[in-house]
Image (cartoon, rainbow, N blue to C red; front, side, top):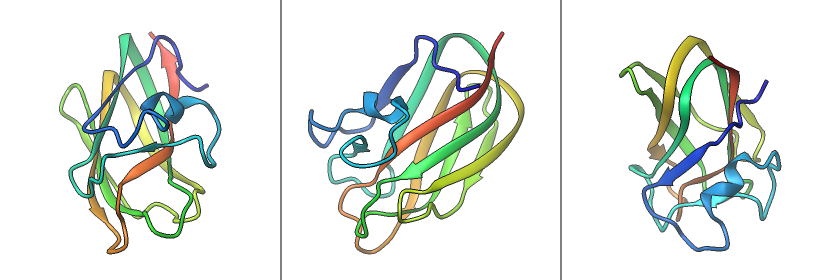
Length: 134
């Protein structure tokens, strides 16, 4: 089950109001439904938070579906400090599945740590969190 209850989103820099972080959890993984940072590459961040704890079983990330901007590495950090390394996201906007060992958290921070040489603005088209509220 996708955990969607009262999600708050916070990003490092917003490229334009036309592609806000709210579009990350709209279940649409194609243009124009995406979040793009303001010309950030490595160091761009997006944080999802919930009012109460959730039990996370997996996270699915979707890169922006264009041939220029591609995230090649990243890190997911939970509010207890535990972290998961994220590899290269498919450059066509397809899903990248990250299994999580039932982490209990109120927030997840995704930090982009690497991008392709052609990337102008790192971003995601979807950030799905699967699990259940506690």
